[in-house]
Image (cartoon, rainbow, N blue to C red; front, side, top):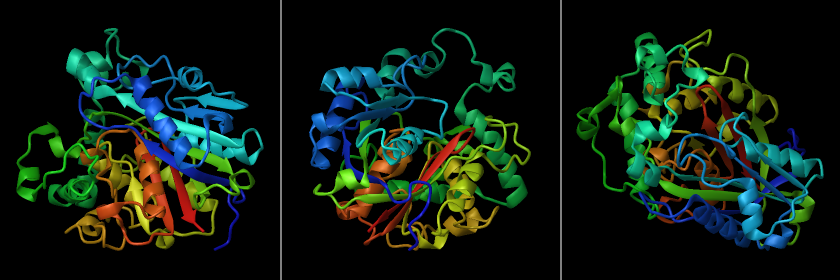
Length: 395
């Protein structure tokens, strides 16, 4: 393997942690964040005094209740962190954008060890306020709904259903083929003791499920939950002597070539995932065939369709045959996909859960859901109007 890429092999992951995950836990976002952060720090063999950088998505000020669990400053205060570099942002390369920016920070010498986290408590928030109130508590539609809001399309399920319909029309993807992404996620979640939904999902149950926004049914949508995930991004020389084998960040995908919208791209059967993926492979000698395990965003199952083809695991318009039957994407398949159950069954940890699971798999700590002995993992988050991707390797 040729080690080059944007970080010259200097950005590595040295620890990962996750809080309790579940539905309506009744715990604060800050409490969950502290739990995940301390676990990640300990996992890396560090103490809070060693952490000199902090980064998170989306930051404070987001109106959706439960969408942002804790701010960078709240966590810094809680753990007594002294930061040489910090960041929180929503306008970045998807939900893993802060992890990508942390890689830049350690490579440039701005920090030695950066704690990157994402926390949500949407399930508890929705239990008290309802989904609509959570999204639009102030009664006003945000600017990005100017093309869809006047027609009643105010849900992400609506926004994604439109390109999904177009893709099915143009490329012949069937609901049965799409269903294999949800079924595979549930199959893997059954082996993950932390997953929200673990009972098997049959194709008949999927096809007969309540329609949310045609062609997307209930099982095509991720599961709101409460939980937090965190990873430690370190500079390679600062990681010397730590207990973990460092995971090298080989490349990142950060491109955005068109408008950051769901419905204004030149080709409506592509998304921002295609832009991010293009820049990912420009920055490394690794190729899609080198990837042993893939953790690809599944806020809706169709987003996983976008990532599978964008990242080059199959040709444009050919995802249906690729996932049909579920063999290729199974734990023992040629491309094990979303090994924790993803967000469709494991719970909507909103992007960072995929980075956490990639670490688990590369360190071979997946237990019953371990997908062999992978050496290269692809991670992708977002994919609709914004997107980010990473390739990690184990030395």
